[in-house]
Image (cartoon, helix red, strand yellow):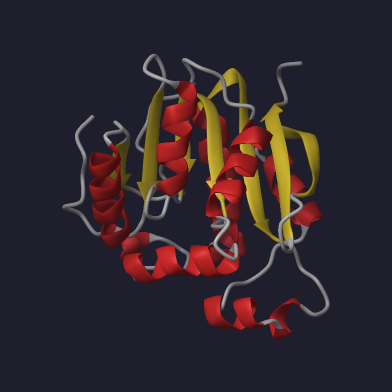
Length: 217
């Protein structure tokens, strides 16, 4: 699949789109207190990636997690990343090329994934669900369910809603929203994805849900 940055689909999504790619990388560094590698390793550990798997990163931003995922699945695996912002995708392509890692990046929407049914072993969707309006979250979940293999899994990670979250410096700087863990589980369930494991990530106010198609044990 070619690397695509020509189209700008951000006006078609029912959610917020971040375009400041350089600022986004700085924000992640700030949010993790410079421990971005620890954050990435934690995400990949929760996703239980294995060599040879085909992985999709929905809302991949500047591609850092997708690049790390490719290193984990190895030469026999494949990783794709999509984002609604062409600026993010352009930076992700440059980062992958500089790292010497083959990841397929594409400007696309979380609500309309440009992939065939049952195509991926794992889907990652981290720190992006809060950008989607409630009306778009079910479509996000349905699209993930559609592209997952019957025994695939999805990892959703986002900011938890806490009493003091909106007063914190990182929350004010990022202007992010928050999503209740129960809401993430519920929207995945509506799309036919059952929660396998969930809880706090152990970093900041992040929570995670690892889910699998309801049809399969």
